Image (cartoon, rainbow, N blue to C red):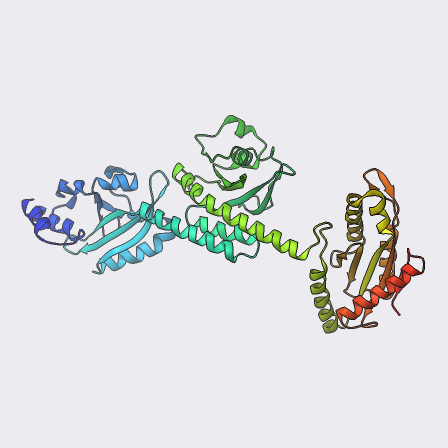
Length: 479
């Protein structure tokens, strides 16, 4: 034993070599079982010394193994090492074990193990094979905290990158799901956002193994999510902390064995929550997971806010703020696209130009607020009168256009125009005050009347003015 200590002091031998030196000095007879002669000095090491036989079963572990793996040495002896390895890492671990047993030194191999408490530990191994003893000797260093720190930094960077690269909030949340899934089990993950105007929840992203459909939006239907969002505090529910009230609740949340939710904080309060669920005991969540998710939640909240702002700016650039209809810019883009498609498919399309007769009188008589309300109701009736594939847009003031494509025959086009005129001919409710409005509609066809956006808009506009000057409240086809 003294000789072993001298070797440790005098030689820069690797940690992996130390157990072998000790074994050789403590076991002059190579046939003597290693478990009866391993020096107790190994128990002083912070790293765990593990010895397995050629079948991969533990024959010796030092005291540090209990701190790293959670099992006592007595529980580990005779147990196959591979049973502790995270299933995803077993193939690679088995391959490395075979290389070690063939004589290859492996000083920096990393893999993951499932601790006795179900948590995942990241281990860096130094290992070699003792041909004399037919044993594989390895030193295990717990690098879980280091990997955790590295993963968190990488996650924050990835979330920031996703915030700039994602096309919309759904895509952003999908990427966030992937990033968080690298930190902890997240097969069941969703982003819940609170809508204060309606006091409901919305789910721009929802992934659930048992319930693929989007969950209810009612606050009462999702009590845990509601508590996290309205209370602004993270929450971890485990089998030992579940309340009787939750067990009896008619909620999808009650089915999860483990439920983890953290708020998404903003300067104005909590905008929503990140929620992860587990339906099986093998995927547990702990306070450490809660802290981890809370650590990234601020960055996620910033990313979602940025995406929401971009979405609003994009909407403002392309849609009329009063009626929520496409504006002139977006309509021109859609008209260009529709014309290109009509040329390619050799089909007809129609452009309807609408103007409200005597709209100025409504503003003069009832005020601009009433006029705005009227325009909003007109926009809704126009949307209700056409197919979803057709386009309704507001150009300016009381001027609207409707783009009809995909093979409308002339009779169908005039029928749609008459349907619109009849719909707008019904009284409007302006805050309790009924108001009748008439409309004039001009129609231009491609390719009959023109083959460019400018020609079609100009001819439809001219036809509308002829209808207006002919007494209004009528439909007129361009000549």
